[in-house]
Structures are given as structure tokens and as C-alpha cells.
Length: 354
Image (tube, rainbow, N blue to C red):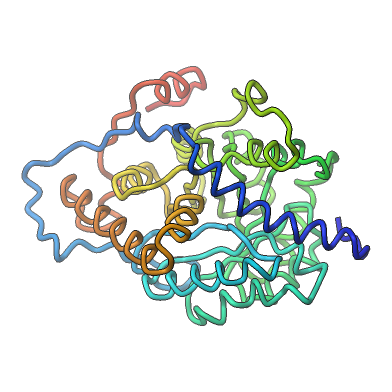
């Protein structure tokens, strides 16, 4: 994984740039569902609430956030993407929401590109910032990734599907769980195990929890499809390949919550609006992560457009909370939710009560 060969470093850095280019294209063409079209909050016609008093604040990893949003892992590792992390961090700082940097492997291999990650902490010195590395990363390197950006927590990403689709990707995933356990015992910040767009099953979540992890990001199907991105990069035919692989964000979140474990759950994968965010929070998510949609907005409307979009999502969340009779996030988490359609069918086949 950690190759000092100059050619390998260049390949990895160029891949970071290509991922952004193809992620934008994949996001523009995306028509997949994250399952939240099957999730319905119960409308309250007599909420007895004032919109100005709706409270979306929370404490996460010991710091206060103005809203339960996470600008999820996107990029870093190439000089030409530094400005993206700078803009994302400035938006996160202004709005008072959390942020994760993209995979830091390139920065661990080459100090010359570490500034493309460090810029996030420079622009948001007091906010919640998450480091990001593969779950197969040696614990000593994880510590360096955390120190690189002064992280409040570290995401360990699971991306088997992406690696298998990647021409130069990993093929051996043995020892991942044991490595996660070592990282948990070694890390001085909370560890968050995160999928990369294909969801987490209840069985996998239980293994992760038993390894000592207390935070997960289900990162389900319905957002950016990294198999598709890798097929684009390599020129492979995507249609017909792996169409049935993955668990939707809604199904993965509901499955995680049904375990009744003391886990902090982050829901990500295909979120675009405040009502879906509210639904995820009602289903047990502590934060909602958004990556692909925010990247699109940033490229279309620059930093101003992304600030405006974040504000709109938070405003829509507050309005949705009022319409279901929730004055704060704790009350929202206790509101009735109706599950229909293919998501209900999936949960039924999995034996998950809804």
C-alpha cells in the first residue's frame, strides 16, 4: 500500500484528480435511489411550534455543530484539488457543520501534497474535521493522518467494490477487521468506520462494533457509484456489471438502528435535500453526510452557491421538523416514520421490524 516508488506516487496523485472529474460526471448522470423515496414522516397539522425556535444544534465529538450535517470525504492529494478542500472548509466553518477530507494515502506517501489536506484545518481551525484513510492502513500511519490535519476523529473507509473495479486496486482484504481493532486501541481520537457507497449490513456492523468501534457511516447505495467511476477511468463497460451490488442508504440505516447498539450512526449516500435529511435523523442517524451533491453545487455555483445550498438544506430541515412537530433533534428522533415500497420489502426479507 505504501510504495515509495516515484511513479506510484504520481499514479496515485493523478487518480485523485481523475476521481473528482469522473465523480462530477457520475453525479450528473445518477438516477439511482438511496431508498428515501420510501420513507415518510407523519405530518402534524397542529405542531404548536414557532419556526424561529426550531433547534438543529448538537454536540458531536465534543464540539458544537449548528446542524447535523457532514461535508463528507471527497478529495485531496493533488495540487489541483487543494482549492476544493479550501472552499469546503470555509463553507463548513461558516455554517458550523462537520467536514471530512478525502483519503490521505497520497499525503502519507508524499509530504509535498499534504497541504491539500491541511488547508481544511487552516480554514476551519475550531470546527469538527475528520481524517480519512483505508481500514487496511497501519496504525502508525493512521496516527500521522490524524496529526496531519489536527483531526477530531478518523474515518476508516471500506471500499472493496471500488478496489475490485479499479485496475490498480487492492485484491487482498484479509486482516481488515483485526487492523481496525488495532487502530481503535492505538487511536487517540474516535474511529468511524465508513463504507464508500455500497452500505453496511447488520452483520458487518456487529463485527465493527465488537472490534471496539462506536461510530459508523453506513454510506449506502444511491449516491456516487464508485464502480461506475472506476469503469469510466479504465474505459470498461459499466452497463450490466454489478447492478445488484449494494444496500440502499435507507435500508442500511434502518438495519443499523435496529441493532439497538450504543453506536453513533452517520447516514450518507444520495442526500440532496432537507426532508431526506430529516427522515434520516428520525430513523436514528446522528449526522447526515453529503459529498457528491455538494461537489456538483460547488462546481456550478462556486463557494457562494454552496453556502446558499447548505443554508437551504438547513432551512428545509427546520421547516420539516416543524411540520412533524419536533422542536429539536431529540424530538425528531422519536417521531413516527412509515416505510413503504422496495425498502419495506427489503427489510421484510431481512427480518427487520419496521
